[in-house]
Image (cartoon, rainbow, N blue to C red):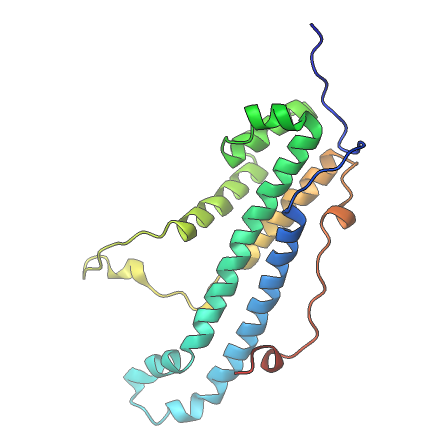
Length: 220
């Protein structure tokens, strides 16, 4: 009985995958997020003189109230970017796996397992390399996907005087969405280094950043 071969990534055929669109959407969401941060900074500066008229203990609350819409928009863009990052990573892993192993085999064996387990199996089969669960690319992707899970599966927790320190609001300026982009780009570079048939410029085409001011983009 002849064992089925592992195919080359660059082979004849046609495949439908949405990972490239998700990759572009992730970057477009980041561009929007950055525009919103610029608008938020400008708005906070413009409110400083007016905020001086309120009691000092209400200063922060006043600024926060007056910029609430921008805060909401910033969180929306950052959350969307994070989800699209995960969709792009998993989408490409599925795309790569189907091309290398064939759709029937991939669906039967790998498609429904966890993201990091899927990646480790692909490395073993396609690259003859045993990824350690504690290796950088595995740990970082796991962290990004765990964060994604917390976003799409929101939980309710009781607020008390004893645990109030765990409910501190994170200002949009402090959101670490750029770290998730570093993980995504690191994963892409790692895959390209393993398989020279992956053309980064072709498979992961970054959209151009819109040339417009934050005011023009958001009209706040």
